[in-house]
Length: 324
Image (cartoon, rainbow, N blue to C red):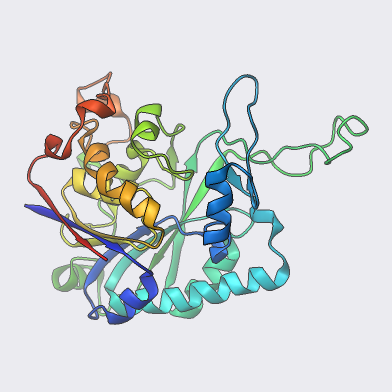
């Protein structure tokens, strides 16, 4: 029976109390600088008043999701971001087994600050996985001067999301020896021995998933299952998401058959994750993240059941624990 454990609280004290060498992989989409996901800014987001979040009503008739204004960070805040990831990375380093991979969702403007902090914490940079998708971010004309400069854009139009890949150095002489001892050190290949690629095509999070978990940064299960599955090269071990949000990582780990731990500070999102994880995991039961194209699963339509059809019993052989 695969178990996922959900913890309501701050991940840093939990990491400091966790026994060393007890986590085999980390997959997370953190709140950059802890600014846009601070209690003050989340209150504004939920009230629809914006704050650091951009809340555009629509574009060409399509409702646009809220986006945090990452570019408003000043130099002091950017340095604090690097310092935070050094502190956080140091705690993750202690609990991770040698050879464990850590993948962190990023932003192209702030990626180097995250990598700097993780390097100082002791991790190796192992590349970046590009999640390709069409974003509303970027490409805007100069504010309040759009008519004056109609052919000028102030930033690149977003079309990918970097997921930074790190690894705790192996403790053994070879990867093979590390795999034998710790079950880590490499990435799990796709079906038929296909290497894991640097680029993954990913559409917008399906409406069926958004209906289950109303979170501004919810990632699609198609992408998350492929990513999470790759992090345990032998298919064994424990996956941690210390900034769980609505639980997309934990749902993906559950569906592919991995044990996992999710930590979330915000009470509202923690409560959402409790109900959303089993429902997200129950979607697309034939898709286990071992292929890039969902058509290869033999279920070309992969029709998602409605949220009303999904209950805690929808996913079998799964248990979970809640902790405050």
